[in-house]
Image (cartoon, rainbow, N blue to C red; front, side, top):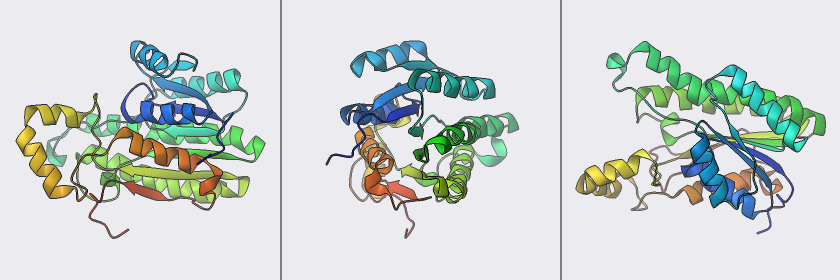
Length: 253
């Protein structure tokens, strides 16, 4: 299917590895003008090489508000406009709610929630000028139901709520905002690969017990949905949180 993304200017945070890198690869294959951002310059340069060597890279620590503003300014200066923003950067920390220090709650919210909120607000101001745009937030099934580490669960839940609020506010400007809630995704730099190597039998039992599809998901399966949501083929999807999880979620919707 031609998603008609050729020439679209796309910025992906956390784009140097895993799901973010896979999203970048799909957009590149669709002919979009892609740029990726992440903290590590070395990983960004490696991803750039893997993706053909032509896309701009923007090293940035998106937990820092000044760097978020610089990132959007730099992207607009490079591309002239922003058509698609994918807020993919994120991570988990801490443990049980009562045993997790407060600073870890703040860190988790800054990385998983406030960064996406701020970048979205900055992007919207530019998208309004052109009367179109798409913002895609990568959340988690554990933002829709209980599970995972409490700090991560809290932040992703907040991001899903923000997605709906922003979507309803900006759709009148031609800007669509949605989120993708991945289930357990296996890739070379993620936590699941470490767990699989440490306890192959236990993880296999988890897959058989908790994922109806009987396997982990792949980054490409998330990326394909992101490309669809960025395209006009999904023009009537506004403020949605879409599970991409092989049936892992226990919710009825």
